[in-house]
Length: 91
Length: 146
Image 1 (cartoon, chains in turn yellow, cyan):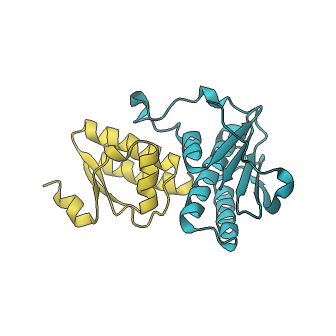
Image 2: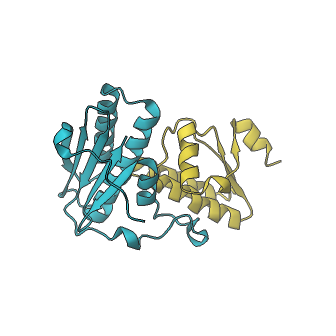
């Protein structure tokens, strides 16, 4: 919650307003994802998928993956070991 | 099925490790979570367990700030960390709100809730911690990690 989630929301809104619908979010600097962050991820995933795109995750920490699994949303996302593999998967 | 608290140690065995009262805002939450993590590290709690407790505390504090205090930083949230000689950890978070009924919370794993942007906090706490008690009227949560 707080500034981290607010900043992410602003970034995602800007990308969407630019017409971007194929996105890769690198989580390597995010040790922990809380429920407000998860809520944001699934909300934007739904919006982006409605526009025919996708939101893919790169380099999530082990604990972030565990957290997504715990709340039953891990299988909604495609997850990659690095940015390049995630970007190439759109081609 | 009702929770079985037969294994929960008596309070008399517990040592107070941290007792913080902070304003109900996001910055204060971050400071409390950092203080909890540092205390757990001093107690030589393994990293995985520290992460799990820190996230559960963050969720409990966020609920206290948003629902218990209505995001009003003039209100205070209290967080205590206690431990016993066996290494069991008890964290309690208290807010001045009217509380809530945990049985009325939706199941975030139901298909219709999977894309919801909220409603996972208490569920996550229950998954991360070993025992969770929500004291009536629901403005204090007590969370055990073994």
